[in-house]
Length: 159
Ligand SMILES: [Zn+2]
Image (cartoon, helix red, strand yellow):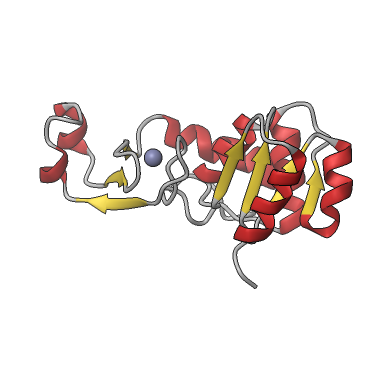
């Protein structure tokens, strides 16, 4: 089965960021009429994630009504509905959903603190907006949250 792609609508900004963080192609839209959200999702083969009951009903099989109020609950709902795994972290930009590319440290000199270059051999750059990523302290936070949401035996603990 293809890796699912998502379209999150307003009020689900954090959820969208987290889905990108664990490697799922997730667009985020705000202030878009329902008809356009539906058309965009259909055009790009995305499942709509929404807190809007009406929109979820219109989307039918191509939508999921997000019922949780907090991020853990929301992420857990999507993870179990689609059987997601956090096996492709560091593949999507959390800001713009662009693809990340593993980039030699030499190419990012000046854009990353010296101390990071000294200890991190894996630097990732967003191909769309240029944001630079590395496995910093929040890497462990991601692992912890995924463990909480997915359970300890999901193979999602930090490397
Ligand atoms: Zn980006």
